[in-house]
Image (cartoon, rainbow, N blue to C red; front, side, top):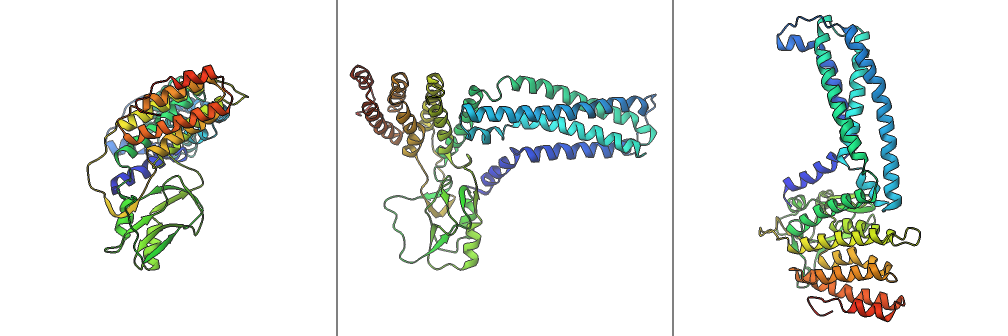
Length: 418
């Protein structure tokens, strides 16, 4: 992973943060409020108009009062939709929906409009605006009103799907596709693959985790830069794993001083939750959880489970067809093994195979999905789905499925022996 790719991941993490987006819109509104009185002086143009602040302040007052109510109401809708998605799909959907850029942008416009209108009214009452600034303030206010109207139309269209099971499936699918595509191109994120033939040196220095939590991101370029000459880091963890403070997460060949170890651990990002950026299995787990919850006795929604299966089948099919980058590892002195096709297949289908064992319709769709993936161009994907098909058949037999249904499951043709 190059420094540019790492910075892109970090930027996207903050870009999807609602707090940052709202802060930036509010900051822009404050800047527009403060610059308005000096627009004439900055442009050198003197406007002759009959517009006064008596005609501007009513518009600002309406905007301030309405935007406060709209912002509060929209936040309430967002929270309600997120809770509904967590109840009907999976609690993990709440975290994903918090990164919904459409909701963030709309709420940011509403709050920004409120800050602008309220700030303009306060500064006007304080005598900050000269009389000839009324036209500029009216012009900026008109632009703000247009932005609010467009955001309202966008918000109304977005609310038709927000919190629904279809929206949850689509959002989870998009996040899983992004992570799988990145993993397919760079399975080790720039590190040298750890294989069965890799031999660790006799003398190594352990690298301990600085805190307890999920490993979210690894900056491979920074690890490469921090390693002394001829030293190699052998990683024992991958993004998505939960580690304890002081737990050994890697070994550095030779003897390394404390300063170097401190620099190395700063290349790891830990948090209290799993994230999607470098954890491709997490998106598949989220979709699998949606299917498993749909199969629970309290919901009993086979259609949603089947829809999730179709999405998972498509994701892993395209993952198997994706080509890998031919460039050499960017972090040649970092040796690591990240989850691959066997782990992805297990994350996607193993829980569903267990939970749908007594449901013939879903079991049949599951076996058909696995049969289709057995023809994947990726040999590891093909082998993994065949192994899981045998596991799914065992679950069905143990659940007491009638022999005629078991025969139909066994009759589904695979591209290779199961």
